Length: 122
Image: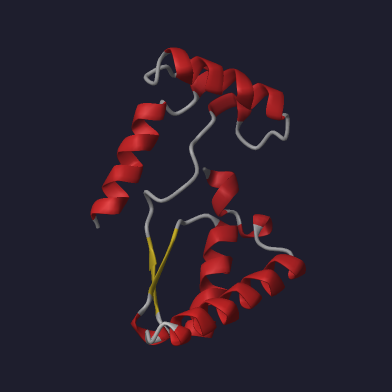
């Protein structure tokens, strides 16, 4: 998880521009639906890219922002941060056999599901 919160892993200039564009478009959608953008709550994980994206959107909407620690990507243990998608496929195959496995140090799928459920309750 440390890698995800490292500011060095934040958005690129293009990513920041895309986040601002998304914020402007969301504001138009909200206004078009008769909703006040200021009454919106943007919720983000503690990960750098997510926080920077959320902040750019929040600035466009002029609304509140809440950081939710449990709202984060699944931890993939030894595979975390790798770009080798075939390795992740192995984990997903193991998930299909047992959602409770922790092979390779991955966070069990049941734990990720619990966190998602918990976040939905807030």
